[in-house]
Length: 451
Image (cartoon, rainbow, N blue to C red; front, side, top):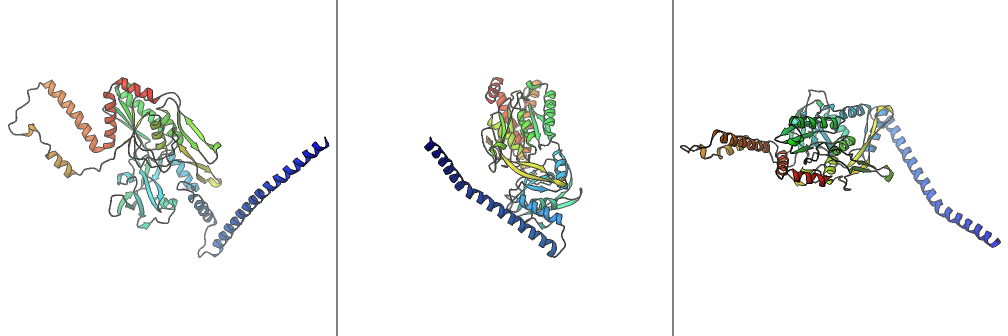
């Protein structure tokens, strides 16, 4: 018994020695790391005081601290930043769908401002700014070396004032200047129309208006068509949509899915991850869907496209999307400011991370450059027919037969005009026409496969 007690005590002592030998260096390392951090903070304080006392001009302490905070955040990635009280308020207004500016979503790449997308109907869109353009100068002042926030501040100004931006565009040999008149930007989250038997839903942004407006517009178009039985499918046009609220992307995706995962987010700590699932109910009632994307489709747009693509609920058409697969959390700070911090990556239902990769379309369709008037006139001159020839025989068809042929011709001409106006949209509508031609049984099988 005494030997057993002695052995037990010895074991406990040995265990304590081992624990001390292992934990001791770890504690020392942690203490050394904290000491190094405190030394760096002391260095920051020393530099701060020297700037305040010795810089050639007097500087505001608050501005120095804000600049230091912003520098710390922007060094992490292009989407983390400090928001001053004014910037935080402007962001809150923007998510409600109305703000002042040029109407472009931008990021920073290679030291210059890169256009993610121009927003529909805004001054930048009207002036011809395109997704992928690089803005190198504003009113002759170079943006090289500026932070993104500094560049954006330079582009802001009074409503009605003119700004000259210098643009570098792929395919253009030389940079060129574009004049833009600043205006108040009022975004219509969703616009709709019916082309033939296809309902087209153009989603321009994911603000808090997006899902309710989309549902309202969808119901309106279906009612005007006389019911879902008269609709052959839906086009979700997400081109040049820079994204917005994650919650709205989830609700839009859920509108066309009966079940399954929509998107998941994963942060540094596995416990911080989140998963969003679809609830029963499909606003399109299983009708085929085509999603249009391009290089200006980012963030929330990519969530919708990726979710519908992974569930095989939609055919994705267009060109590769922007590839912003990170989640930013806006954290309020003292003094009415805020911090935008990248806290997670998001993943499509199949587990794809599209960060820097983008969503690849099922069918790649480039938007061809618009033809000029001379090319169109030349095509008209070369498209003469038998009826144009002098002395040609007249048709012996009845008036009813002529009318039916003319109606078919008008529909075909409308489709051709749409291809000239928007080739990608026309392509999407043609896909839905083809699916409808296969019959309702095929569409029903497609819906069953998706769900």
